[in-house]
Length: 80
Image (cartoon, rainbow, N blue to C red; front, top):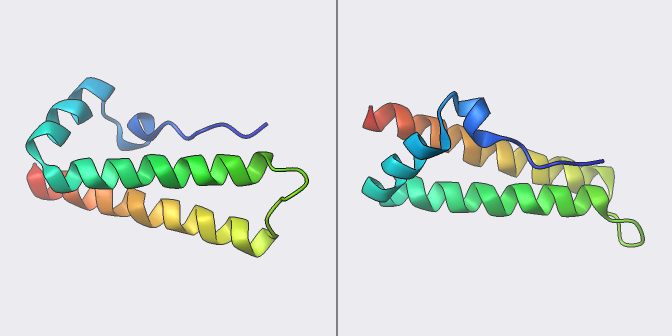
């Protein structure tokens, strides 16, 4: 069963630390919102039955999510 990724664990930060940083950084806030949407799209695609996407479409969704996560990491490093 597909589950959403724990971004905070991947980033090695607490949710509180990220929330504090996102209030001060509009770009980080935007990226986190994009990540949430991309992750939701992947989970929706993985749980689809009758209208399940092709493997290629699912792979592209996962790649998009990873690209956004990489941008989040870059933004966190830039603001540190």
